Length: 177
Image 1 (cartoon, rainbow, N blue to C red):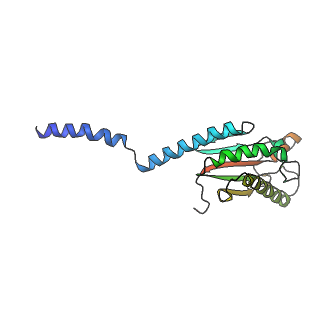
Image 2: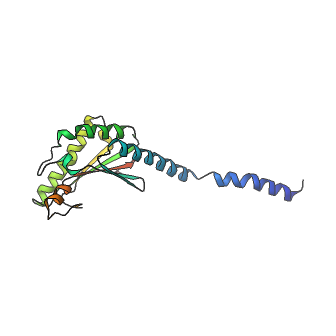
Image 3: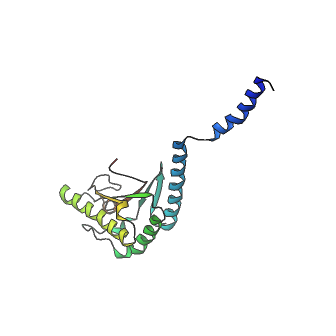
């Protein structure tokens, strides 16, 4: 066999192997994406009453406003408990995720009161999920007051929509990084 034939033969054998073997970073990204797509599908089915969306491997869960809080309250309606239990059970299937819990208010009240109330709402949601065995070390809470409204604060319906908690699910989030 001449050298040219050996070269072509090796090229035919080696190039496909190189082409089909991805870098470790690409493999990790694909694995993460597959994991988060599976989590999204599970969450969407488990809490079909909620708005569940995914964008760039970040899942957002938003429950209808009437299920969580009344005006000026951080206490979660107990009628929400079965829904939160299903949510917690689905989250427990994906222990490589972290849950960011962002509390919000409408624009009634002062900034100080709203920031405190929004934090209390996030903490209430965290406590309820912890009741259903979601590890607290996976959950992070923030009170964001009346920032980021999703409804018109000039109407009662809009203010009701703004009294909410948003759950952001990320793959292995670490706030220290």
